[in-house]
Length: 341
Image: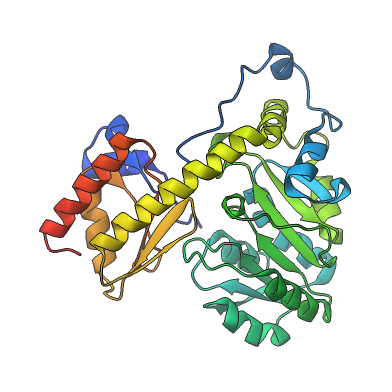
């Protein structure tokens, strides 16, 4: 079953009769300032990828994780879909805790692999039910609720799950905007997903990483041999993960952009909960139809946002440059003038 995600501008263009290049796409949470990829040498396009090209060593330094526990992926989505099947093969069907509101591909993948879903609404609830679970998924920070677990909470969950030979999967696709998740000292039952697409603005490269020591890591690695990640993606990843000056500048851009966006949305949506995780800011509504009305009103002005699966939240990605910020501000003023806020 296809799930609803950000992007899909061609669908929006057809629905609202607005040209594709006229849209301001704020639906994905991908940084609007992509890493400036150098010209890729022709030899990179012409040759097959090689495992000893330095990518894993560079990723180990960036993520502060042991190189021997890192697997390069053609996007973290690969692991989201493959891990539940690997767990079913190695450990059998299980009860898996997944966020009630969060990236829905996790829940679908575990259900399709034959596992029983137990949905939790926040981390406090997950801690309370962990004793009755075999495995759990934590999105760090959660997309779209922005909830984040501290190290003690994650360690406590891992300790509870290991009693039943259970895994804790931490999806850290948006974690680059915050102090890093260091996996060196984590228990062997913790698996961490990282993405190059979000913070680096390189979603089209399709590069991510799985970090951990559980048997399922080797299982996924075997599925990816011999050439699971393209040579250009690996080459670009090496440059982006090693460029500390650009990363520092990106951190500053995202922090400033997130502050400006959150402040603007708090001003417009005075009665709603507004939360930020750096690369996106979400607005949660009590009225079951209000989010949909605002989503449509913005779309009529060629502003594309992410409407929640339950129809009760809107997620805004960073608008980027001054022109985009002005467009969003004007569109929000129109929404407010129509009494939709």
